[in-house]
Length: 219
Image (cartoon, rainbow, N blue to C red; front, side, top):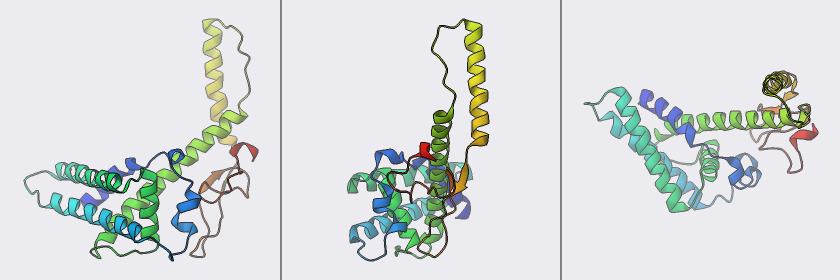
């Protein structure tokens, strides 16, 4: 089960959505709310999703006539189809579903079977890591653009234009090296500190813990 489950976790990472098309994570993230007042609907979604993942993995293991690679592909497709069905049924975008799954893991919501947790924890952790990396790179790009030297839009010859492009690439690479990078440091519910990398000077928080007025360009 471990081999297929790990492959499934990695493959399903691509399901991480564009956060900009979803509600603000500070309004619904499990790290900012207590376990009280959780809607039964969210717990049911979490349990149903975990069951779908487990059944996809178990069914693939019974396909003894197929190679491990073929079983992994089948399990991934089956799990994705079940996830798409759940999202459609509950009218969830990918990010909202991710927040429910994340909260379910953090607060140890019950699953249909105890063994479900070992698989789903890995998948949710993989998605979180991918999302963190994607947002960090996105914000680093924004910082680089904001600090790039402006160039006049005068007419250039082909050779001059080529040199300008090369210089822009060089400037961007240098700016990425010089960008101020620190860690969020926000206090978590478990007493620890958030270790996400952020673009900005000390005191700037990550996307999940910053205020709505905290813009990248002002740090």
